[in-house]
Image 1 (cartoon, helix red, strand yellow):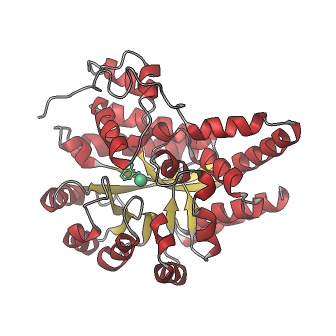
Image 2 (image 1 turned 45 degrees about the vertical axis):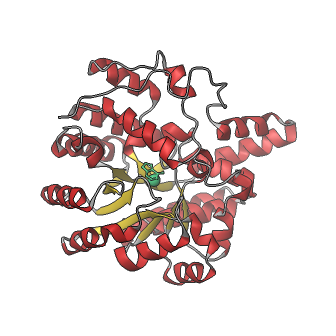
Length: 379
Ligand code: ADE
Ligand code: ZN
């Protein structure tokens, strides 16, 4: 087992004049303070989004580890954190690119040791779903983040699954679990992880691909994904987050994905856009993540609305909400404000989230009817 390490003292914190913890939150706050008329409109939109039933399809459970829980788990597991306080850790959450974020994200995950830790992490996220009217969620987990440091696959999945089960019974939130391969690791490690997942076929509905996109094209995992499909798993993949549009095309052609995670680079390729629209391959877009990781310079320039206007099946999601300063409702609200989305657009996004989900047709129909009724009553 590799030694457990805490977060490195002073990393990106000491001596740096910190950027606001979450630019998006500050953005919303500023807008709310503008003047009375503006504040009323914002409140109404915020309330509208809050009440809108919705699904979340792009959420890394490790990315929901809030600094407060991170500190609690560190204490419970006797892990020495080098950050003196929650506030100091929060100040480190400023990133120039995906890799800077991933370095901190993997380091943060080191506090997850026992099955109960994975339960607590997942349960806290489900409570957030309840608060935000997320009626269904499809959750990524990264087993290699944990097995690489000696935590058993069973510890991870049993903790997450027990919370998901409680979420269904106690909160009425349905869920699916998607196992991601870390693309910065090699094919052999992915094959080994797939092997471990075979004992849990009843709990894992699909496999995905995440971590550092640059230098790790979808083709690296073509054989792993072929085996996963043979074993009955559906496939999804992160593509076109930092990488080029060709990675989105490769994920479709080589990995036979049923959904693209992010996929915003597709906006640069009109042939690809036409194919994604024609096949109605969903994109699980994460606006605040793209802002925080500088995939877009400002939300006003995010391609979300353009992708919708091209006829793509686009959804809005939070990715790693503990790190990017917003859960799904904050993503809807910040996008609506920056891009001028109407209530009809927001209703369409909520419907898209159900259509693009892995729920059964009757379940989809039930949720779409509820969204439609809400939208009609609150237009
Ligand atoms: N793992 C967690 N968040 C991720 C992201 N936004 N992109 C790729 N891998 C991730
Ligand atoms: Zn992601």
